[in-house]
Image 1 (tube, one colour):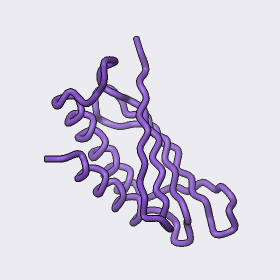
Image 2 (image 1 turned 90 degrees about the vertical axis):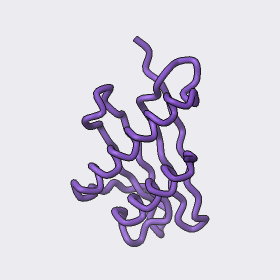
Image 3 (image 1 turned 45 degrees about the horizontal axis):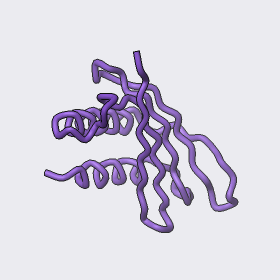
Length: 110
């Protein structure tokens, strides 16, 4: 299994739950250590180029949380998490015009 599956699933979740006119979707997430939830900020850039926020349906947030928790476990199990251990924060950018997904990971120590 490749991490590409996670990227595809996350992209699909965001595409289905984001605003119809969004050009880019941006999500900032902090996943709880227990894997039972997280804190999220959902933003998008509209056709006017302005940044706006949106609130996706609860089922989309649950699906995103589940996918991020699975991805985090996959990274840890396959030694892809780096020397600092499991990541717990990420920023996801989905560019709809370019059909491009970028995820940046970060770690809280302590």
